[in-house]
Image 1 (tube, rainbow, N blue to C red):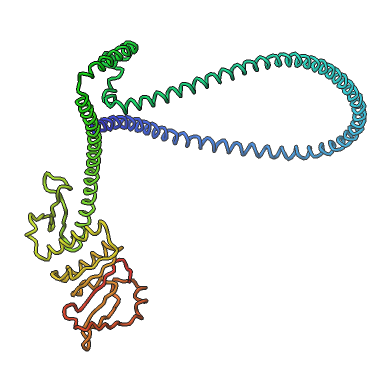
Image 2 (spheres, rainbow, N blue to C red):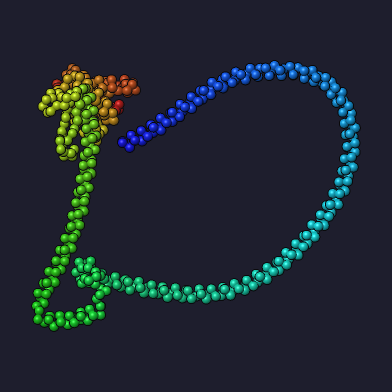
Length: 467
């Protein structure tokens, strides 16, 4: 920001200088405009005097022009007669010149044809000599190329022979390599210590420094040690040696299993860490979405109030959340300060906000407005229509406030000893649905028991659908 301020001050200085320059130029132009205005008036006066004088001169010139015009007409008639005589003479002269030109043209054409023919003959003769020379050169070049071809053929045969030799060597090397790989694999399978000690192979100054160690000497020493081993084997209990080898094999197998377990442990820990990150990010995303819907739904159900979910102080969202409620700008310290109806609305808002995160196609609400006032019941209907436009609701209610947003209403009443269900179209449905349902008849259901508790059942379809 300081850098931007310095740049702005610098730009301000430049603009001040430019403003002074423009102001100076404006003053100069203004003074020049005044001078030009004065000089224009003087020029206009001078121009009027000159126009007046020019008109007098033009009058005199017009008079003289009329006199000259009459004299010119006379001269023009004489000129026409002379032109006719001259035209006739020119026609005769052109006819004579045309005949002369035709004769000269024929003579020139014959000379050009003769010259052209001679040139063509000379060119053809030269071309023939050139072609004979080229044919001789081609014959010489053909002989040289034939010799070169024979030489290249011998080189090619030698190269093919060399290629076959190299192919045999490559096949031999590949066979030796495969034998060496099988030998190494058998050594690794036979001697488990090689897998543990292979990191020390080739290390300078180590036990396995192959450059400093002479294989012939080591082979002689190996044979010597084998002889000593055979002589000592007579004095050593072979069963104990077998137990030692078995113990070494079990130790090697345990080392291998430990490495496998350690690798699996690292992989499991990496997966756990990755899942923890995904779990935290998903919980964070869920909290933000549910919190926004929670506050919006609660504000719709209880105008003038707001609610939010936030983690306790010093904790993250995935560690725990608290419900905060405010009326106006005052946040309540505890939910015990709320009335029973407000708590019901708060619980309903939280449940519906969770349902909004993963909506279902249909919901059934059974007298959720039983402990609420009529205004709160009306707000529940408005909220369902606003926030759940893509879902269907079947709502059981005893209060008229809920019916104002219903698409279809089923009312139950006790008539002549039987329970009767009446279907009507609610104010929340579309005009087309009203027309389609206008011809529907009431349905009577004999439940064999009087409807004592629930005289009205309301079906609210927030999405405008009717099943």
